[in-house]
Image (cartoon, rainbow, N blue to C red; front, side, top):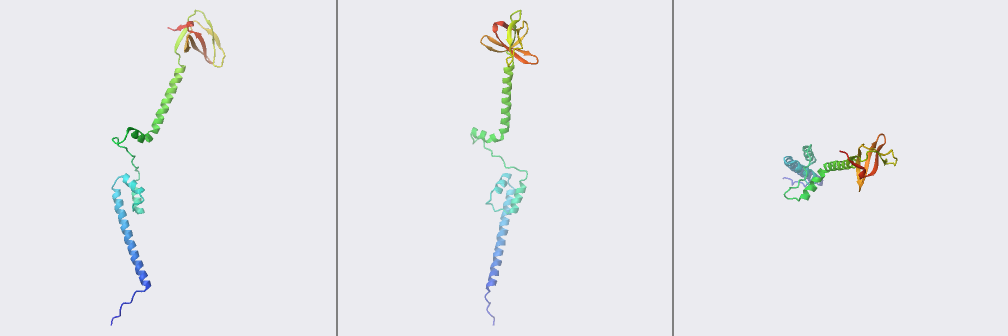
Length: 197
C-alpha cells in the first residue's frame, strides 16, 4: 500500500519560496536589462539632443552599463543651442536670445568706438584752426606764457607764422613751440594778425 506524501517541512517550504523569489528576481532583472538595452539601442539611433535628454532624465529605466554606452556615444558632441524660430518670436526675443553669444564682439566694438572718439577729441583739441602772421612790419610786444605761467618770450615776431588754437570773441589764442620747453600761448586781438597766404 502506497504511503501518502508527507507534507513539506517548514525548512523545505522556506527553501522553495526562496528559490521561487530568486527566479522571479532573475526574470525581473533580465526583463529590466532587456528593456534598458532596447531603449538604449533606440536612443543610440537618435540625435545627440535626445541622448542628452535621456541621460538627464532619471525616471528612465536604464542600467548603468547602458548609461555609459549613451555617454560614450556623446563624446565630442554638445547639446544644440536653443533656436527661436523667426516666424514665431518677436524681434526683441531674437536679439535677447543671441545676445549672450555676442557679448565679446559687442564689448570689443564698443571699446574700439570709444577709443576712436577719444582719439578724435584729443586730435581736435591739439589741431590748429589756422596759421596766421603779424599785420605789423615790426615785432609787437605780446607775452607768450607756458602752462606753469612762465613767459619764455614776449614778442609777436613779424613774418613768423603762429598757430591759432582758439578764439574768444575778437581775441585769438596763438600757440608757438618753444624747443625743449613746450607750447607757449598768447592772447592777441584778431586785428593784430591775418591768415597766412
